[in-house]
Length: 489
Image (cartoon, rainbow, N blue to C red; front, side):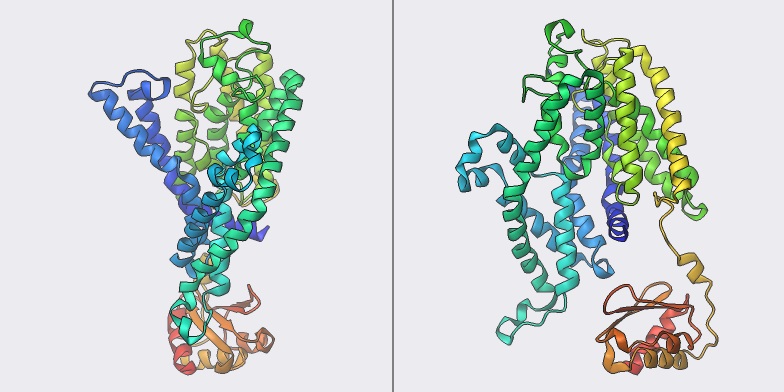
């Protein structure tokens, strides 16, 4: 769980970039509908719209790369940029080795299977980005201090991190070469099996669609229901101007349920997060989730919201996916039908409302109000009941640590006692500090005596790793760190 929460915090940086992209795309689609619906693009207004759409899409379409670098930096010790470079190297390695052209050359039989080929067509997804970020940061944390023989000394330390990441990525790619198409194929098979369940099947699909977002495997299900992988193609037929009379199912049933959830449910959930945020973090939370809610409402871009909490509170994300399934069944049963060519936002609702398959569009108002209230109260209850770490509620003792008062202002004496408790300068390998903590790396953690360190008058001692020691000093930590460094010279 701690790993997931750390991953969630690392994703905050790339996630914070995404809301503006969704807003730009929403405005762009409004100014230039042809970018979504097709057709000639001419005139100043349309060209401005196209410009804004492409500006937003530049980052939305490359979201996985942002995740790779963000996780690589965010999960590296001291948030070192070397971890981000290593993550990018890992991403490039994995996505190149698992690209359809390379894979079908290595294993020609894959080209004979449409499902397996499709699996590798979709390899550039957020899951691979996050995986690359984890590889890059893990390699940095493990190998940043590696010393090589003199003839290879140029590649010692941080310079070897990206090289090691590349080697690890080759091994991971070899594993995914065998595993990825099996997972993808299994989900296609599941999609085929739930088609016959009608309304319930639509709900199960919506639930799995959201649940699989972090892995990128939702593309497998999407191709079953939206396109013609098995002769279904809900999206394709809807936008072709057909109606339910032209197909064997209720056209639009695999898209309609997303509209009330994305347009109204997400804003409701976002409001609940703001209400539950710590007072000191409420403004920052509003900045993150409010803009994400606007993205979801206007053009159905939900990733800025979802990746903002899915790893911080995975239980809540499962509940979130379940709400999609429930609302999809209700929406389909009531006869609301709308379609999207991009995602289930207000712009697509507007564009699709004039198509022949659109039905009971007015129901978006009562359905939307219901979704807003249900998402709001469910999120509010779950967050408070289980103390979930949604944005603005992350564990952060910084404010309390700032109030720590040392027993005296003799920083040399305090540093000397801490050094004694850490086993002497021979046991120290690294010295650093943040706003309130002295962060040390030691050779032998068993030589560290917490009682001796605490006798220096510090607030506490934390051992987050096998060789890591953090001493909570308070806002005067810099003076203690300077004295500590001099004693270790």
